[in-house]
Structure formats: structure tokens, C-alpha cells
Image (cartoon, rainbow, N blue to C red; front, side, top):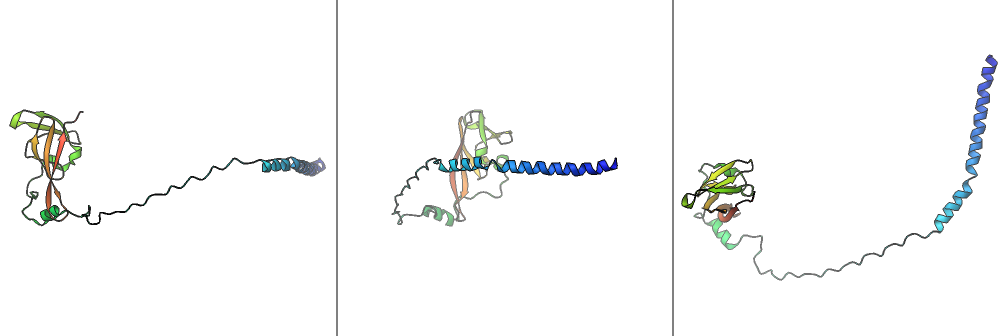
Length: 179
């Protein structure tokens, strides 16, 4: 019985090698079909290539305003305000009010209370807290002082730096919001 076990694996190996050789020869016989397919694909015409886009020529522009003031340099009025020590200045010794920590565009007017000279405006900050604001109080990060209150808007005057060490006044307003 031990002879039969020793002979059997060698027969199996020989049979396996013969099957592999036959499969290899069978795979090589189908190359004619492959060569025909490649030849047919080479003879086919490809899709037409689209034409190149026309390059537009741009007209040149000649700038003829060299004699005018540079829009990025300060105007003479701004230079005079910067050199004038008597111009508007923020009061640095004044205690900051609660609405001065928010940007003016983040504040919303939601209503008014009272009428006439004693009218107060209700302003909602980004956190959702509603504040009562009177005339001559401050709000916004640019030293904005409330100058007028009406039923549909608030008028302010902000102090902004003019870039030359001085300050200039800028008007601003907040309208009553719809929501």
C-alpha cells in the first residue's frame, strides 16, 4: 500500500503538467482573432477633433488722467483734518457702553418706545439681547453716537481714523428690521 501512495502523486503531477501544456497551446491558437480585431480598430476613423477656439484680441486702454489726484492717496481735506489737532476726537476716558462691543452692521433696530423728545429705540444685539438706546448714547465699534431717533431708523455719527493720525466724522444709520 505504501507503493501505491508513492506512485500516485507522481502520476497526478504528470497529469497536471500535461493539462497546463494543453491549456497554454489552446490559448496561443486564438491569436488570429486578436490580430484581426486590432487591425479593424486601427482602420476605424476617430471622432473629428473640434476646431480651436478663436482667440479674441483685446483693445488696449490708454489712461489719460495722470494729472488728477490718486484715488488711493488722502484728499487735501483729509490731510488738513489729520494735521488739525482741534478736529473731532473720540473720548478715550469715557466708559464704554454695552453696544460698543458689536459691529454696527450686526445690530438690529426692532422698535421704539415713547414719542417725541423722550423716544427710545429698541436695539437687538447678535446675542439676542434687546437694549434701550437714547439720543447721545454710543453704539458700534467706531465710536458711533446716536444723533436722531425716528420710528423707522436711527441716525448716528461715527468717528473713523483718516489714516494720518486724525479723525473724521462719518454718518451712518440703522433701519427698522422686518423680522
